[in-house]
Length: 261
Image (cartoon, rainbow, N blue to C red):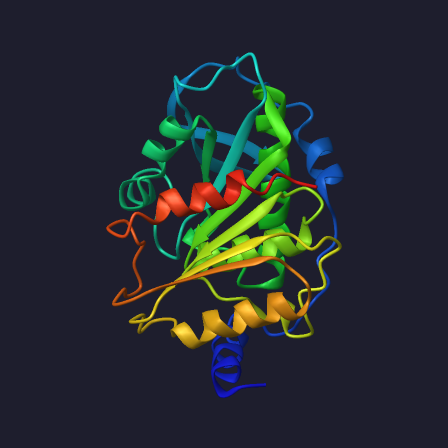
């Protein structure tokens, strides 16, 4: 293991003391969400949506552009925010994914993490994966979602969780994109996904919070296990979304080329 991998392991060990198997799948979440009243499908921006998962009320922001044909199956992108950032106001502004959704005609959901962090302890991993399952079920019942074009993306801690969702729900998610987000302790023994999903990794070479060396190691780990990888290293970029470098166009191009197979 390299020095940078050891450093990241040490950091995450403070929050995730042991690698634990992540159980479950969509089934349990679907059962819990079965009694939820599903709103009628309509276009618009809905910043204060929520569903109940187990005993928790989980919030999300939903964007259904008017360019989406509600009578036909549409792609779905689920975007995970970074640590300490909210999904309602801040992330949509700095990622500008709303504009991309309108242009490319997909449904967009921004889940909100409990405590504003994703999966950094075993119980949170389980709870956050259950939230993902329930949210996907809710949106699929509410809108016509193409089951072969469900994508996840995240920034920083959200990028870490996008990696995790891809690995744990590889038969559900078509492709994954992680911006400035490292792999976690769950992958120390390998990603070991049931399906080799395509992944896009974006990282700035001037990132001082999460060094670019980690992204390069992530790329190599995926490649070694047979995943298709698109790696984008942005010169001069710190720990920021590459908005000025028009990264969203590249992200969508990657997703569009990779429906689930």
